[in-house]
Image: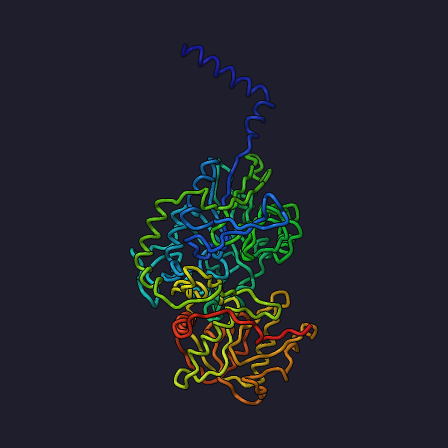
Length: 556
């Protein structure tokens, strides 16, 4: 029997040697790889309020809400999607941390870093929110250790990320080197594939300038293209870009009609050697083909995992085909992962006593969504709270407060009969910026309001406190949109030459979001944290009801 088997094997081998077509056929079997991708996790360890909104399968003209997300359910989804492919890797396109709910933010996002490491995340690009607390804090996220100010707060030592952050376009000015490696190469069945990670070049305008003063953020496409020859020299033909920048499609979560936004131009500028682009930042879900390449994005807040299936040619080492599917992390479809549950419970035992503190109550949901003028219900309340916290002379003597719309991160929804907890308040103000009261002249106040349109495609309308109002004209040129005679405080015209005490958060005080005029303010006085100001406002003024926005008036 053994002799017969040897004869058969010898005959097969001889046939392959003599038949080039058979040999080529055996060699040409493609290597299959599944890439699982997420973006904009933002510390949502628990399912986000409202889940994800998608088109109704039974009536595409309507939209429905699907309960989705949370680390416990995502871990199960990732595991099950991995099991369907022998070769697989889990990657991310930035903003894994920052602007996080209480459970993660309370511990400076250490739980999120641990959670994603437990899921097997391999590599991730940095996003703009990775820099919310500055370069040194981001390095701590990678390497571990205690927080520089708050120390060690968690239930166990923080050892840092098990995954590798990538930062191809982020350079340290002092050394000329990238903050993290520009790319990572992984090999699957002998075929190497490169993952280049980078964030949007506009990151310095989205974070506190002081935290990234030593960093340079270079052009996205130029950065990638410059790395292609280096990768080819290392024998790499298959290239994936993980980029924290995105677009705005008009279709459903697995579609891509009419996509617009920065990602379109970036992809068109990329070297043809780039095979796949995993994007983020815009909090959208889409599967696109742009310039002949697959481009994906997985929504936000842990609600979607993108399953990307590649076929790689073992001879050329390049991508033969690529297809993707955005899988909704439905809480009813994916059971809770026990390991994740244990991690969350360990942190929650420490956080719950603080999170559950009663703050007050509301009569209706307080929405962060702006009206046509740019004013929101919750934005008004946040500004009022900051004014209340700094109105007394000893606390700054403020008469006006401004807050940036990006700092108001989530609605305060009505639940439990309208009860509001510290965790609810924290979710809407998660950055823990201190308040700064400074003196600005009436002219400087108008100048800072004109800076709301520095980026015409993405205006940032400051939220203003009660008693202050103004009008802006959308038909006027940028730089001259605020009507000078419309600025009033308690019914009195703002005098261009008079100094007014103005409260902003520390992010704005150092020129965040491009509001550099605030840096001209004099006699700054640092006060309480923004979240604590809002908490105290709820304690003093509940129940709080939504008010009609009329502080900002839009003409045309």
